[in-house]
Image (cartoon, rainbow, N blue to C red):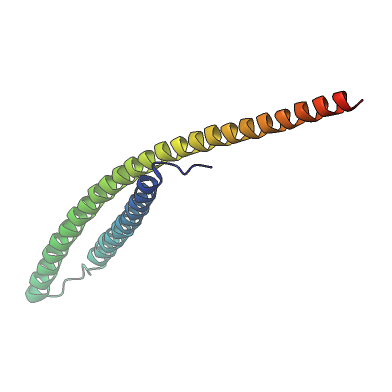
Amino acid sequence: MTTFPLAGLLRVRGAQERVAAEQLARATADVAQAQSGAQNAAASLAGISSDIGDGPALLAMAAARAAGRSALSDLQTLTELRRSEADAAKASHVEARRELRGLERLESAHIAVTTKAELDAEQSALDEVAVVRALQTGSAA
């Protein structure tokens, strides 16, 4: 059986697809981590006590809420950035997977064609042997 002429390219595309899948997994984990941070910040912001005893406590509460809102805004921006990175990684993975599948289909077609050619050659050889034996048997009788 002849080897697939694009076997090297198929291996490269397989490696590229695995790298893209790894990047997608990492990006998805980064999105989950950023979302978790934003949720924790929102919960922390909601947990700031609204019990005001005096002026300094009011100023401290206002400063804490302002800082919390700023941190929450930063975390929400980070989450959106991570989502866009994950979307890009997903698109890259889909493209790498598509290219790999195309080569795999070509390889399957190549295997089918070469297998058929080998089977046809074997059948021809068997037919030739049968004809020769039939001729030998017929002339011996």
